[in-house]
Image (cartoon, rainbow, N blue to C red):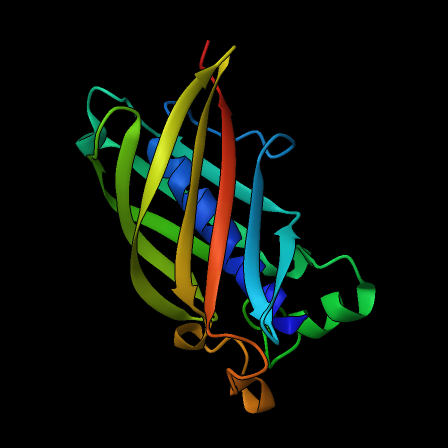
Length: 188
């Protein structure tokens, strides 16, 4: 379950970053948005969700190169659906939430990749370790809102998530997929 927490965290960051880069609005609606991480524990997919995150986006589809996004995720809010697993992933071997309470994403570029599709690049920081990530994102218009969806694969070990006995990838896989669905209300 620790791997699931890690993957969820990464998913949350990716989702927030994607939302921030592709949104035509300022602040994401956290009640309608989701960030999750999917990992494999003993080859079985496990998904967890981040309950607290903040995404700020500046995006004009006519000028994607001028877009920017910032995401901050409360790693202590990761929820695998079981209090004992949740507490374990907050610990030093996984997220070390007391020392590193937030994971962040800051975009550096957003480029068009076709109708309603964009490639987002930026810096993802987890447990004080920063990595450049690039991922695809789709943008859709809904009544009064814009949505940003995507999935970002990451390596948990590059962020020191899963140390000690959990560094062994035969139990918890190294690859984690961060999925996001970010909803941003249109500005008035």
